[in-house]
Length: 265
View (tube, rainbow, N blue to C red):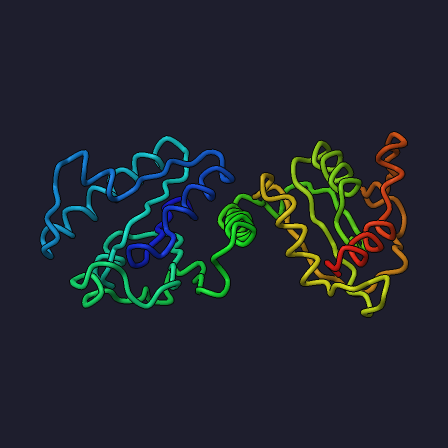
């Protein structure tokens, strides 16, 4: 999952998303097609020129992967043939505009096939600063998910997380210290005033808040668990973590109240 292609028509927002995504991924290199063309002084947009450009972008990405980084290619990559030849492991298609500024590119552009497609962003999901940040963070978590190893020792967190707040994050960070990865189990509660979000929405919120820890956690919606029972000593530890007063005083109830007063809930 380390060879990443962000494709779409010119002006669709590829570079905006790519810049934010690389920042969140951390160990990632960004390659912008215009900068690569300028470096080689190659502005040939014939089929042969486009293929040559694809191979350059592919080579840069492969070098990043070889040194252990994610390689993010930000370029139009207009045809299915070029998209497949690039051999991405994760493709982000910016389906945010119907036409770009170059008629020749508009005529030949083809939407990526479903194979290898990670996510498609459309116009109504995209154009605001908040949405750019949200999508970059969620995509980063999705890309890094392969780093999570289910068979390795893992710490479990179980809760409602209505909403996931700074106290929960402090608990997560402490849980992460124990085994290096955390399974976050979200209780699927009946929707009420005290539980305004469903489990899927909570999982998404947690992924947004913990994006910098991508690959070190997974979220799981689970039934409304009220008791945890186990038999004789089977190797589990059930531990309560204690924090300072500032963390202990954080209240989901107060956060929900404030969000209602601000019209956010």
